[in-house]
Image (cartoon, rainbow, N blue to C red; front, side):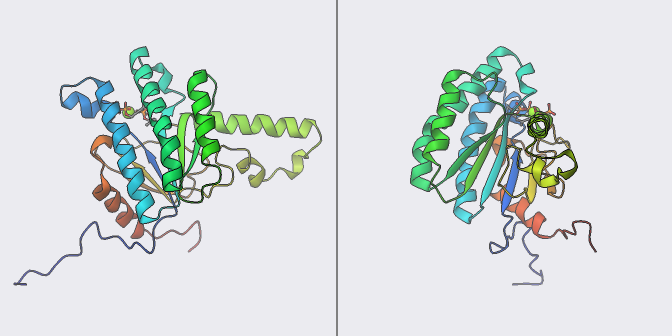
Length: 247
Ligand code: IPE
Ligand code: IPE
Ligand code: MG
């Protein structure tokens, strides 16, 4: 033992008090690759492999909902080659996920606009959602072609339609009426948002849902964000005092 007192480990997690819903912005693939003298696309390949690893860990420890930002409505601005690589990695991932979901009892959902996606990827997304419909384990929400402003705009459009058709009156519109028209309908809001990659912004991710989420930012790039890093984020979350506006 000696004269040194043992400090509690930074990563000590109380596995009985886990956040129910963890959201992650998968950022830093490009820089990770560049630092190694590789093309950005190589970073996306390693990043998608890392997603598999971290998602498996979340499922193993008992996280109920995992939501990841994989491709934003703004990411179409990138060079065609990069967008093409990301799309084919997503396709590959979904094909494998169709098998995985049954084995691991996972529920898979895609949040985002289907507009602009290829017919092939849309068909795969539909199949994966169908296959996992009856699963009762962790729910994984993959935000693909997702933008929060787009999500809220669509919800408003649907509400206005419902008002025009007399299904609901303008005066009676509640927060729940908006909530139930978002991609996230039926899912509790994230407890913890994690953004690796060093940027301290939301980049149009879950603007409505993150209203009271705890935020955790780290310089670690997504491809190097492993189980230990997740533990560190959860441990930090567990030290927070959530007040939701109260005292
Ligand atoms: C995140 O990594 C993946 C996507 C946005 C699709 P980036 O590609 O944004 O990596 P950096 O931020 O340029 O390092
Ligand atoms: C956010 O990362 C989107 C995803 C991770 C899918 P970006 O790399 O696109 O965000 P900005 O451009 O740095 O804000
Ligand atoms: Mg980025």
